[in-house]
Image 1: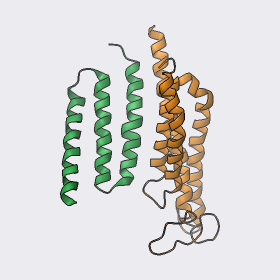
Image 2: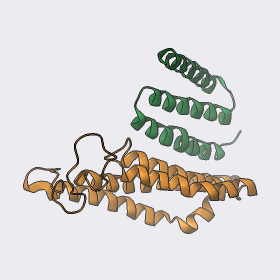
Image 3: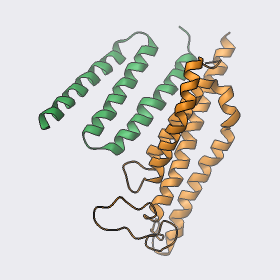
Image 4: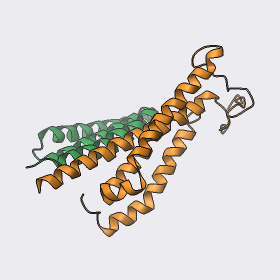
Length: 80
Length: 158
């Protein structure tokens, strides 16, 4: 059980690092924002694995859903 | 999106958004028993608002989700919160005068493992509901304002 949990920790953190790296590297704005939201969603999963469901709900609501919606509204108002 | 999205997205949104809102209100109402509380539940309800705005566009959403009403709701939540804080001023600021009083949210909590009684907690429960109303209204106003501004700029550039 414990080894399974630490394996899940490692997988979530590695994928989160990849998503955060993509959010910095990608040139187009929309894929970058989606990568940022994926990193945020994985961060909420990591909070849940660390027994903080309270913070996980807040992170999933604010970080993944609302921030991405507001970023996409802002990107729509810009020009290429 | 100046027009609404495709029929598939609209159908899924009408199926899902009620459940998201009910989950948010559940998190608000059970703030003193389970993980979560006013802020978390309010942000979940506001993400349902964001889903509506993305699917149906700003104009159609504002027909049944007025920004002025949400702004009024935000102020109301804050006023309720500070009123409950001042009502306890007989002892101290933020004193929990409702707990174990037998009235609203006033039952005494049972000790030990139990499913939890919703009618406990005193002012904690009432303040959770006030904070929930405030947060869902404030985040809804933010989403509506941002979408309206981006739509206006998009129209101006055409």
